[in-house]
Image (cartoon, rainbow, N blue to C red; front, top):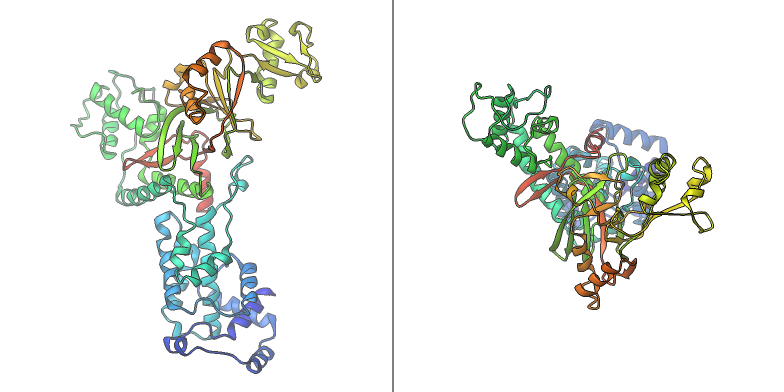
Length: 545
């Protein structure tokens, strides 16, 4: 048994002791080792002792037993945590995990608090156990900071972000050699501003949740409330808005008209919480009003975990799409160069989370119909309406690449599903005037749309998976601003020609499609509708044990 051997050899070393032992150092001769090995060579005996010791302090569950055996065998079973400062730094690092939404007890806090405060009273085996638990705590803590407690690939069938890599033994060696364990831990903590902002929000909402007592609950039964209508729920809506900081006027049970001041307060609330800012008090608005600070706290914890899944380095220049908030940001260094509204995939055709790199821009694009849309939308519509293909400006190509006459297609044949359907460039093309390509396995890209009015809606999960971008021509222009020949006049000429034109992007621009529903903006915590209903499942997994 590997772990038995580890305990055996560590037990020989008198790992760390009282200050006097640390100063003079302790060495064990080969002759002494041989005697001890002979006495403690029973793996079953060591296993039982370890089980007894761990049970006596709360049934400790080690996360990295195999790695522990490997690292100590390479060290000839010499202890790591002989320096008191290193032990205390790790302990402080564990204590402060709460600031990041992690649970200190997951890193053996209670046991270490007890053992580290009574080292001089521990016997050799108990010191061995403490040594091992310190190392396991460091590995678990830095791994969770680096790539999260949960594995998103085990949660989602589609996940396109590579897990952050980490050399746990190398990181530990570096921290010990530099005599700075906290710096080693900090090196794997996410440094993105969204993560830092969420930590500030976490502190705020912990206090709000702790002080929240019996919040007002608004009945979710009844019709939507529109301007100037009367509703018995109006007084409680005002009370709940007052609890949340959006209403500071008189509240009387007799005043049940949805008047202009209340409409203004409701719109402010809707804007902050990512609800359609129409002033109508519908089911979604009431459901959001009924969310407690504890529920919002849980949402923040979930989003901190998400940011531990995401890339540590997004790149010097990148496009970041927050799917849940329907926003795209072009960032260079620490500056946000542009922000655009977006439309993303519906619940049924979700926009996936993934990272890639911009390759080229296509003006006057054609649209090759994706398989799902082809089978579920195009083929059924063409089967019912003979003029559908021509009206949509579609071209059809068989498996040999030959263009086919729609009138000659047998729409009842199974061969139709193998045909390629392409919509030519033009005003009816759903890609609009431009698309921005970063080749990926999901066939997702950024593009224009002829339906510009849809960007005025707050809830914009209406696409088939790709991301429609408001003002995408301006975004494309910024991606080409290092190529002077593609100035405004040249782009206007290309667009006017109607000819499909592909231009390679020579700047190095990453693209990150991410999903987060809480963030801190200008000192205020903001929330987005969990359009894909993912938050609750993640929170349940985080708190499962």
